Length: 245
Image (cartoon, rainbow, N blue to C red):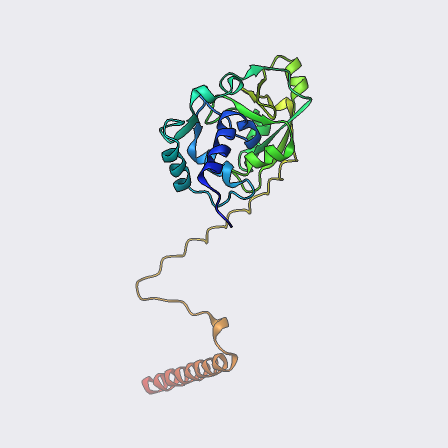
């Protein structure tokens, strides 16, 4: 894949950070900062930009000194170039339906307790499914799509703020306004294996013979020898008694 010129990457970064972070599923902080890792991931998702690495971002920073601010692994465009709507999302009535891409492991908890912020003060909600899944895939290769009855939630008093044209921010959404696929059925775990009965005490060096494991012919031979020995013992006792008489 042909690498593009650094000035082309600069233009893309300025567009993302300064004008339309919502188009790429990014939510800047109140100061306009975005985690470098998330920015890099968003850029690589774009067609023709999958080759971009941290070294490419560093090259842009060197070519454009002072145009970007980097603090604690977060980056922003210089405030003079930031759109006011990015720094201060305004409350706005949401569309009827909004979407969220949830991690599969978190989905049961979300359905039971609602959408709550984790790393950021707000939960980002997308105005269409494709963007919600794009954001969700950054945390899970196969995210679960959740529909939010945003219009009803707004009527109930939940405040939505609009970020750009495609994202809405909310502090939380109760589960009553969420809709998603049915939860997987809980499988009944197999019963625990019964512990074997405690073996009776055996003196050291003793062992038991399982007669079923002895071949039939060998058993018959042992039984024949045992019977012969018993007959010989009885004959010996008779002879001894006659001698005593």
